[in-house]
Length: 137
Length: 137
Length: 137
Length: 137
Image 1 (cartoon, rainbow over the protein chains, first blue to last red):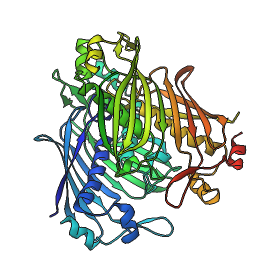
Image 2 (cartoon, helix red, strand yellow):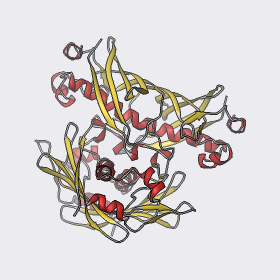
Image 3 (cartoon, each protein chain N blue to C red):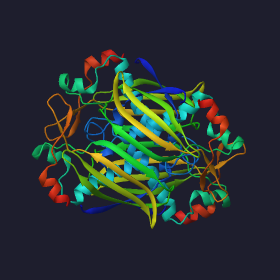
Image 4 (cartoon, one colour):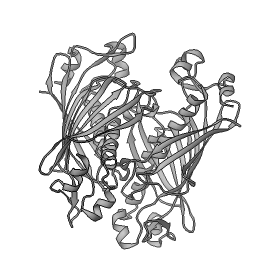
């Protein structure tokens, strides 16, 4: 179990496509923001600080699975509820439910890692840092 | 089985984030373009034409599952191989493999529908139109 | 003179580029949202309503001139102050000042029109609708 | 005078808004790519190399002025002609003409700088580097 935060998004005209509904890559834009706000609201310092202290440069995405239940359009106010559904050895599952009032619009489960960067520039996955996990639970 | 098309994308500076890698929602932007080019290259008319002839306004996404294998950055040339992996009653699975030369960068399976629009503006799923399926096989 | 509204934006990680600053096209994304919110907050109905009542489908951009004074990055909270600086016969100048607390980050003057759509699909500029102007002053 | 390059863009469905035309911030996305390709095609190394050799981390935008002449929509193939219209002491004017066949769709003049980064992270403008200017003329 983890804390849960709510990130609010207002859908804008330019977020919608010629079918007048949200163009789906924008949902991932908002979900990525919700992911970061989850850690911020749990008290985890911003990644440019954790880079110096823990070697963690961010939480890149490894796998994502999303279901689009209902469409949304501009003027809609969306609430993105974000939590961590599972901690694994070197990865974690971050879960999102995107609501418009009581209606479920979209849901998404992501696998992310806490990434470090090797000397050659490549990214690698850290064991889940205990300090970060504790802040999120 | 279906035809397979290749959609080419050059990664730009602005597609990358402060970690200097492609910001992942951009992959979905490119995949959505590859989806449409698949139908165009198979000979399916653009959606504003099929809206008049078949009542099909497009192929909205119902479900997507993506795996991010390697990172990409600006200057990279990506080849997106798109095909249809499965035809179901009222939906189909569109499959993508994003390659940089021989390296697999990302793969994605989507469930999409051929959508019509009701009088009240809502979308619904048509049975797979035989004419479209025939063009894609 | 016109009313002035303030549209607030929080800069996200994905809004920034490998130089770790806001990638500039995102400023135009936010300004376009501020433009629409200006009319909404002045009491102008959404464009899908004015399309039916006045034949106005929106306010497409004809000309924009922007100055980028200071950089912004993720975590910053930006206030976009929007107003209408000038009414012309068939166009108007919408003005924006993007602030981070007391610091001016960016400013922009746009020329926009109230657009209708001809039978062949082309857009044209209406005379400034008196009802809309009155709501904005 | 400078060299001129042509950067080609195919407009995608998701680049268009509910008015079925290109949502204007996307023009700036493409222009920013054309700006970088101009330097690449002139033989200027990528910015992560010039950062090491010249201290130039990129060409941030100081001022942009764009005119939107005709609309474009998905399926259109756009040619962006990019050149440098003027060299100034610590800045330069980069010019773009966006064409669809013979039709002028949009034109834009930008003021950009060759930026370095100070120890405190702030950006500053270099004198125009002679090696870069020579490659572009």
